[in-house]
Structures are given as structure tokens and as C-alpha cells.
Image 1 (cartoon, one colour):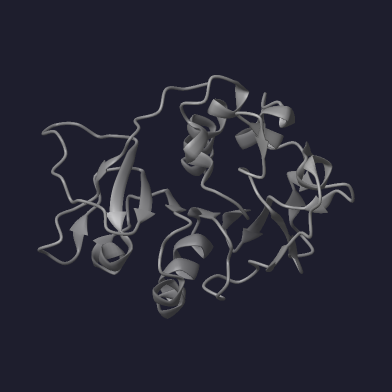
Image 2 (image 1 turned 90 degrees about the horizontal axis):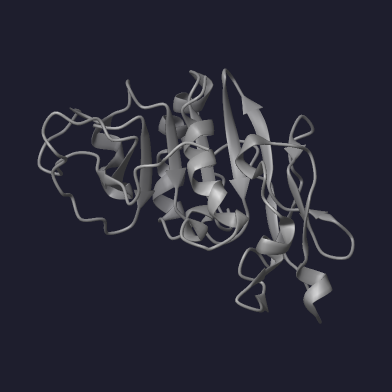
Length: 217
């Protein structure tokens, strides 16, 4: 498991257009501070406010993490930008409940009617490097509480997708990955995977493994 550069630095200054990103992976968030990166460094992860994303030169960027709190209406308005990035070979990790059609194939998120822990239990499905070595028990319960990882599933996923995690008594599809053009899209229908980076168990593996996967072509 490689070491990740987290938290990310800023991707660019908001004062100019078409400026180069300073990292191979950009974490797209809402309201990020744009802080200058250290001179002469090339961090593995940069940070960019979603409203600045169209101004960033993505030529050298290999992967994007779309945080669960970002403005999906704005993402939908920039659907061509995101789709073009993936079809040309990039990788995007979508966090949270996809409620607008800002990328082809995102499926439909549906809330689970849960009555107890078994309804929200996470199980691993098709093998994938982001979840390699992760104990699903560490995802199912956090500090003795279930539901932190996700409280729903995704319907109408692409036929060529692999389902990497499932949820509940009926093993409904939760996390999945599918090809789009020459690239790939990972969809996680819950709280950001990066939120587990400091947990004292196997769930902490997901953040560096996600970054590794985003930078592979």
C-alpha cells in the first residue's frame, strides 16, 4: 500500500484560466481554499473547487475524485467536460448520491428501508484494488454505529459494470466500476471513501488504494 499525500494541496490559483494542475489526481470539493503548492514539488493529490474545475488544464491529470457535497447541477452543466475526460482515458471516482445525470452510467440511487444493522451490513463482491485487504466489518460498523458507509443502493447500473461491494440482507449493489470510452468510472453511493483515511483499521487502506487506482492507465 503506497503512501498518499493527504490532505491535498490546491490544484491552481482561481485568478487565471487554463492554468496547469499541479497533481496527477484532483479532489473536487465545494469551497476549497486555493493554497499555493510547495515550489518544486509534485504532490499526488491536488484540490480544486468545483466552480474552478472548467478553468483547469486537465491534460496532465489522470484522475478526479468528485466529493459528495459538490454541486451536481453544475457538474451536469459540465457533463461534456467530465465525459470527455473519461473517454480519453481518465478515471473518475464519484462519491455520494448521484442525483443528476452528469456522467453516462451513474445509475439511480435508492434509499434502503432499514430496521437494523443487518439491513446496512456491507459485503465485498467482485475483487477490486480499491477494496483490497479491507475487512467489510470495518465498513459495516464505525465506532459501534452502522450506516456511516452507506444507507442505500444503486439501481440501473451499466451492464458491463463490476459490483465491488453490496449492502444489506439482499446484497444489493452499492459500489461499482464501469468502463467509459478509454477510461473508467467508480461510483460509491455513500460518504466519501477518503473519510476513512485515519481510521485505526483496514478501512484506512481505501484512500491510498483509491489514489493508486486513479493514477493507473
